[in-house]
Image 1 (tube, rainbow, N blue to C red):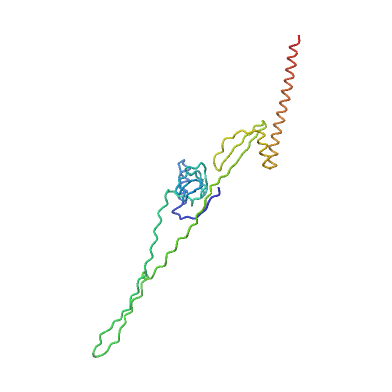
Image 2 (image 1 turned 90 degrees about the vertical axis):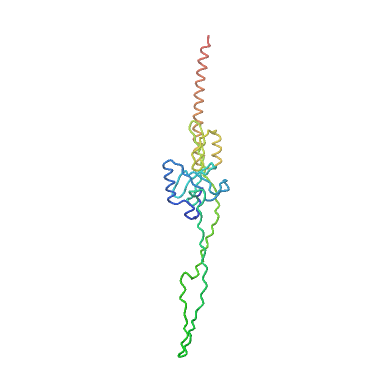
Length: 238
């Protein structure tokens, strides 16, 4: 199955340290367990379902999810080390801008001897903390990715000159199943239906060799049977 790729915060997916820890656990024969970040309805897996790690190749992990009789590849950003995701930090609330203070004007008391000019006091420049803060950036929306579990299948046909044929099956990265015997005529019909000339020629050559060997054996047994009959007839002669 082609690996699925998606971006995720480092706190929600496997990090390089997590991959190193899982690799060490596999090397020492310990069980390595990870958890799915999103559910897979097609396989009946919910978010946080556990999966046993089978192998690790770079950032691609081959795992066996609980309740699924198969091994599936996942990327590191599709898995996490805990069943539940870590709590997300609460967004900080923007501060409300302070109201500007009105200008203050001081009116002096006039002296009877000499008038004084009016003095105007100018408020100090507002501090940077009084400036309205910039609005927080909106979190980017995530697209839901549809996961499809796929696996490769290999079918192997094995034949010998003794006209013995067998077939074996391999699913994905799992161990091959035990081979089962099949009839020569079934192999011949299956290869002919494929339409591959090289495969048909190889099977036909082996079947012809087995047919010639069987014919030679029949002729040999016929000669031995004739000799036995002649010996029996000589014994019956008075």
